[in-house]
Image (cartoon, rainbow, N blue to C red; front, top):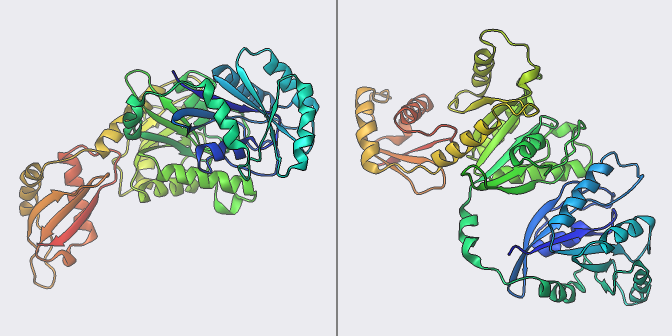
Length: 437
């Protein structure tokens, strides 16, 4: 049985702060501005030997100024339906509000265990203020301070009584599952693609750029695939980022790239390849991650005989010299070729882990080197004697030779291209090192 704990409540009561404390890291963005969290945010926690999932939700509000209000409410209801136990968080410093009454009315109808949690109880005098929340009809309020952690241990002691003991059969498997991160500029369709692949409204989608703020992780296990799919906030140019919230969103996106195995770089077909697309691509390659380029909104482009071929060639020209990257043209709204993206991403993940035996490498590459040796430098000839693949999470090859310092970049690219011809490393950056024999 999966143990799931959902944290719900009105905006700005400290739900994300408690979520971060439970999962043991700053996974959700926290700010004094209300309405920071929008999507459902998942994390893992454990207490007294019982592991459970935690869902952070956006603040439940009605008739507010937030244009995402209805979508946030929808995500809150989905989290309530999914959870086994619910934390209803209120703010002891403000007392009961109309929004609290609305959420309490919803939770009283649920047949699930609800824990009423009064947050921001930072001193003993506020414990008396918490008695007001008995009016909500959800039993005893548990007094905690999310920011300092006081009271959370007693709360968790009670919560885990409603959870079953986990069987850790799948723990090792989840650690080795590939992590596929969808990245790109704002409003290119990242969240729409993930919702289409999952066939559910997992992430909030609106025409407003910057709708996604946190990096949202979901396990995808359909059609024989099993991996983690991560949605990220759109990455804009540094000089365009003015708000603190967007800065933290961008940092989460960059961190997601660094922690991924494969990145799906989404571009808008109607806008062409822009400098910011290239900046994100270079960030992916710099971190030695697998890459799949996806051109969304292909249905908006006027097409002639060779439109797709010409568009692809322009992209490959921009990303040169590393051009061995899958390029897929899709329309998320029409669900055209979206599953080709999954197949390409999983193929790149396999290629990134590919190991070539030393014998295979030498049998394939030494004749090529002998036929086309490195250019002589200052009358000295370079002789490559031996090639091996190093133990590394990404494809790294060592070439042992007599004069490694004289091997220049053009010849390294030549050898990389021959390696790609002989062995399949599509979508994966390759590193070549030349060492003294």
